[in-house]
Image (cartoon, rainbow, N blue to C red; front, side, top):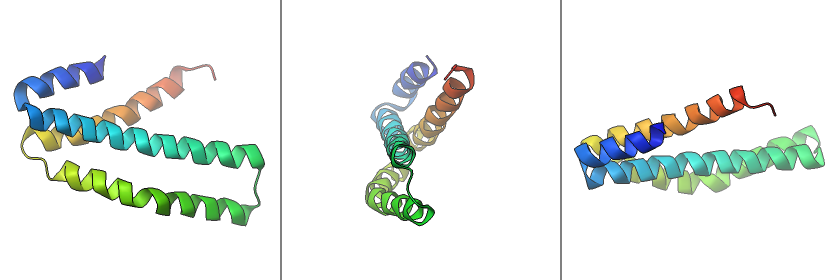
Length: 106
């Protein structure tokens, strides 16, 4: 609900720059959360040795770094409402995840 409201307000006030900022911010957050989920499920499934867990974590960090930099590069090149929507949408995805985990029974 809040993300939809952000998209509507950003689209009205900022136009294309704001919508691009929202798209980049949400994409960056979803990409980071997905890679964290894959890493965590990999580590929990196979129970690696401590040294191997560190190696996997570093490997995932190194592999996602170029794409992470591209998202941040284009997100910070936005002007006006776009940069605000970029930063706000990153925060909203993380807070939505925290809220979901806090109220879920899993």
